[in-house]
Length: 414
Image 1 (cartoon, rainbow, N blue to C red):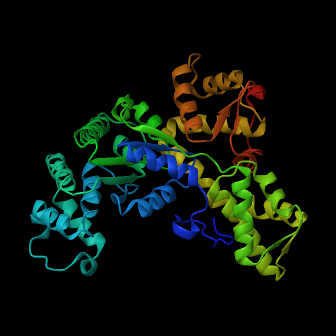
Image 2: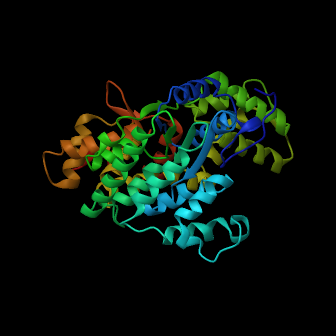
């Protein structure tokens, strides 16, 4: 690790901006070297995209590494168009792809740089239909299999794609959505098996894929993918990051100030560590005093990290939960989180009471299991002997600030 680190909030980082994670990278690359397909799991903002991008940089002499973001895809045809454009920087592969999508390129003599990535995506997408996307996707994999060195395809935000594919505008699973999702996932599984050793597929996303697939009873579609969990930083890594950022930006942490920042965060999600430093830097810059004391850190945490400026960041957690659970189950999930935030623990008894309150039924075990699987998998809550508590105290504090005034605890409801 270098002694100084540039600020990099809100974007993926590679090279000199990529902080630590050496052991994670070593294990991740080792799985790829053994031919594994990988399902990366982690809480939000843990640095999944950065890890994939950095791995791609380090492996480019040994593998052909391709990266696609599936977040805006709604169906298999959109996803195949994204995969097709991965071949564009590689002329021989691109020439073969253009033959495959000859209707899309008819009369076009411009390069992708001149025409624009979006324009070419639209034309390729228009050449794909619900009836032929699999055939053309199969041909794309055949083209990739002709590359002399092994290929790694990093597919980011696949869970968002699957969620979009599976559900309607109210985030309810539809029969057609389930059929399309099953078809796509079985196709992806078949390609991962057919090209084992030649093509590695890495799936990641800001929501968990397993809970989304479980909602449609399609979990078996990824049982040949090796889970790889990306965990929060340890104390030494987080402290090193803060000090390296401070060195680069000429912030002078007074004795115990950096340590106090970590004490307040408690769980060291990389983005939150960087975000807190960003708030410290901006405030110090505005007041024209680059010295930061323990009291400053406490004040900045309350005013900046929990204040209006950070509301957009925390609302993303809420919005993502809505898309996964749908409107009908989201209100119950919201109350479960409110209970955990306001009462500091979500007991089994409170869960049952809240579920009965929302559904009007006594037996809600299946529904609660589905919701809790998502809340645990996606890093909102964790289980303790007394019940469920927030994983990240920072998220708990935000949740309290947003809902405490309006929430009636389960034990106080009639």
